[in-house]
Image 1 (tube, rainbow, N blue to C red):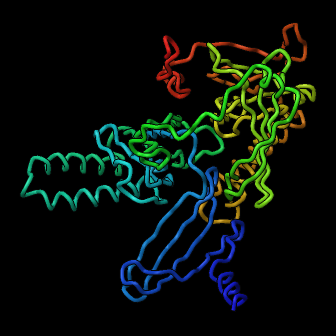
Image 2 (image 1 turned 45 degrees about the vertical axis):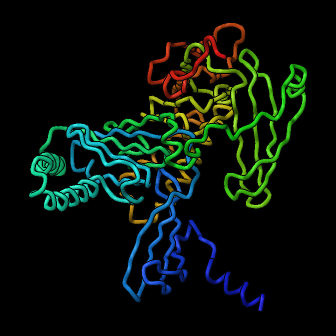
Image 3 (image 1 turned 60 degrees about the vertical axis):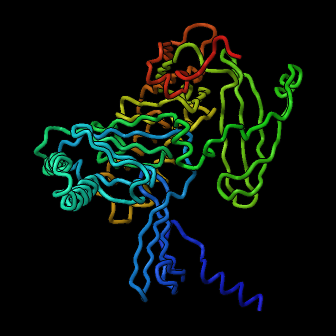
Length: 444
C-alpha cells in the first residue's frame, strides 16, 4: 500500500525540467466549487532575466479559471526601479514581468498603479496600457452619475494613456518599481546598453519590508539577538584558519556548510571569502565581502587589457561595483555578477557563461527575436576575442563604496595600464548604500 502511494505521488508531482520546458499537469482542488480541477505548471527561463513558475488552473465542473506567475527565486537584497521613455512602437512591444509587489507610474499624468493591486503577469508595455484603459473606462461608467468631478479627472488620465498607446503624446516616462527586486522590462538591443531605460537599485524602508513579509508588523523587539562578545584576539585568529558554520541552503532550505576565510590583499585591505556547498541539492556559491567599511570616497578603476599579463591580474569586484566595457558598449549593474575575487580572465569567463546560459534557453524558441539572438552571439564572440588578446579593451570598475581593487603589475610604482580615480558620492549613491539614514555622531 505504501509503495502504491509512493508511486502515485511520483506520478502527480514529476520533476520540472527547465531545458525541455515540459508542462506538468496535476489534479488539484477547486476553491470555487470544491471539486477537483487541473493545474498546469511550467518552469521556464526568461532571456537576460531569471526562472519563473507559470501556473494555469481550470475546473471542468464550474468552469473557474485562474492564471498565476511566481518568481522561482529569493527576494533580492534591494528593490529595483526601472524608468522607461516610450518613443516608438518598439518600446510598446517590450515584454514586462511584474510581481504582486510591482507599482507602475506614469509621471506625465501623475498616475500610479499601486503594489498589491494586481497579480503577477507576463505582458507588454502596450498590454499594461490597454488593460489599464479598459479598467478605468469600466470604473468611470459606474461613477459618472455619482461623482462627476472624479469622472472628469479619470477621463483626462484615460485620454492621456490612449495618447501614449497611440504614440501621440511626446515621450512619456513610465516607472516600474518593485520592492522584491524581481521586476523585468526587456531590452530590445540586449546585450548592449538600453538607451531609453534607466535601472537603479534602492534600499527598502520598513513599510516595504512588512509588505513583502521580511519584517513582522509593529515588531518593536529585534528578532536578532547577540550571541556573545568579540575580542581582538578572536578576530585576529580568523586570519589564520578557515571558519565553518551551518546555515540553510538558499535553494532547498536544507542545512549546509559555509566555509569562511579572512585574507589580505597586498596594497589593498582584508577581505572575507565565503563558499557554500549543499550536499542535498548540489547548490554551490562563493562570495567575497570587503573586510572594512564603506570608504570616504568612491573609486573608479580603468585597466587596459591587451596581453596575457593583463588577463592574469587579480581583481576584486565588490557587490556594489558596476562593470563597463566601452568598446563593447556594455554595462553590468552592481548585483549582476555579485562580489568576487578572481582574475580579469576569470571575470570575463563568468560574464560569458552567465550571458550564454541565460540566452541559450531561448535560442530554439519563438519568444525571442532573431536580432537579439544574433547580437548575443556576436557579443559572446567578442568576449572570446578579449580572452585570446585579439581585441584590446578597457575594463572600468565604478564602486561608490570604494571596496574594489585591480592588481598593479609594477608595485609600488605607477602602472601605465592602470588608472585609479577617487570621487565624491552623489546623494543617490549614498541612498543606495544606506548612508543617508545612518547615524554616526553622538550615537548612544
